[in-house]
Structures are given as structure tokens and as C-alpha cells.
Amino acid sequence: MNDTPAIQDMYPEDVAHCYGCGRLNEVGHQIKTRAEGDHTVTNFTPEPFHTAIPGYTYGGIVASIIDCHSTGSAAIFAMQAAGKEVGSETAPRFLTAHLEVDYLLPTPLAEMHLVGRLVELKGRKVIVETELSVDGVITARGSAVLVEIPGHLFDPSK
Image 1 (spheres, helix red, strand yellow):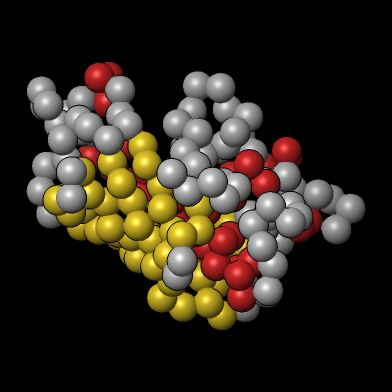
Image 2 (cartoon, helix red, strand yellow):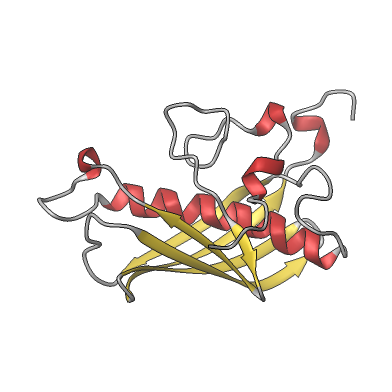
């Protein structure tokens, strides 16, 4: 397994509560996104209560995991573009401005593997494309436009 730090572990505490990726949300998914070469990776195993129909994952969970993987990927790509290593400092936090998910096949209720790739990075905007697969079969693709949170939204002193 990739032993580089997960970007979500580097989020400032005041913005680490997201249901999908917040390390401080005890009942959330707490996904972990890591840099791996020129792309990002996340693995997530849904629980039986994430069922849509027997044996398959509810589509909202698929979208949620793609969404949070994309925000983490945006932070990684922004840090890399600035010449910073994940783990060297607090990570920037991104919000989703637009998300499209294409459901290619029903997603089995099994470990998901997500791979994110940078499409564009311009100022505070990052575009990420993500593929979600189970056992090597791509079941969903996402495209997300992410925007870095201005500091004043979570820290009024900025």
C-alpha cells in the first residue's frame, strides 16, 4: 500500500468534519486520498447498509465517494503545482462547484478503487476526472470542478 500521507489527514481541524472525508466525523466515511505518481488513489469499502439492491451499492454513495476523492485530489494537485509535498504543511481545502457522475455499470457492494487525474488547474479552480472500479472493472466515472475555500469562510481573521 502507498505509505504517503493521506491529504485528509492534513486538513485544518476546523474543516475536517465532512461526512465523506472528514477525519473528525466519527460516523462518516473517512476516505483517504493519496498521491501516486501523476494521479491520486482512494480505496473505500461500502457497508451492507449502503445497498441499493442486493449485492450492489447505492448510487448516492458512489457519487459521494467520487465527490470527496475529487476534493482531496484537488488539494493534492494544488500542493504539487506549488512545489509542496503532502504532509509538509496543512492542506488547502476545496469545495465542489460542479459534479457529473456517469454510472456505467451497477457497482458491486465491494471494495472500490478510485483513480483521479488532473484535467486543469487555474488559480483557485481545479478540474479532476475520477474512475471508480471494483475488481478492475470501471463502474462509474466522475468529472468535478473544485474551488479552493477562501480562508475567510472558515477563519474570520483572514
